Image (cartoon, rainbow, N blue to C red; front, side, top):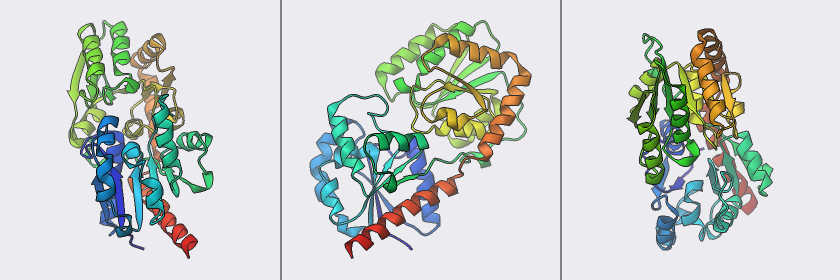
Length: 349
């Protein structure tokens, strides 16, 4: 069954961050399978920008042109006034990587926008833990699907002949919940060391937090290299050269970078939050995300013990073998969308 699909999102879909990468990997497969999807950007990602773009959305989106409307939860603000009216014409699928209230936000408006999304005909989340959080907020479990991201995006780029270096890499945006400044401050306590820390990912997503990270780097007495955003081949090279992956996130909707690190055989040092413990399994060491001494001890332990690193690397690869591939993710999401259409059509007839 080929459906006429619209995917409604906000921000810049070309960014190399988790949700946008997820959408690109899935839609690339859908197109290859002959399932088209119109990706429609409704405005900027920030709340103020979405509020300003709201009035235009009703004129831009004609739900009768599509079989199903898929809404990215990032667009929760700009679509809020329209979801209920769209549902009278077509089924709505909400794709929820994370919600601000689950990540710790207490804005009353966020709860209102969240409730609008939870009324969608089908809800798709990216982890079991995410599904449970939505159910706790009143979501109907019978309307819910789980489609975790794949771990094999970099498979064709991984070099096979590079030796592992005394290198710790961290991949993530410089935003407070990724806790990069905390990692750098912990790294300072490890000095002196012959190991290096490389930071990969967007440095400008949150200018205030970036200032905090840069300050931590300037005061760090151990080597820190800022790589910024890398294309897939260069990112794969970093995974191949590194001996440890570290990211003490305070919150993760799923954690694509952890899945990719496991698939590359890297021992993981991470924050014990949300779905991360289930995702990492025995392939790493987990610590309370804001406990600096626990992070320092975990890094020192893995850095100092080659046999432990080998054991964790083997466990990481074993864990990755049971994680979804992107073909599976794309099929799971397509199944959810197809079921939304057939269920809605049956109900209407």
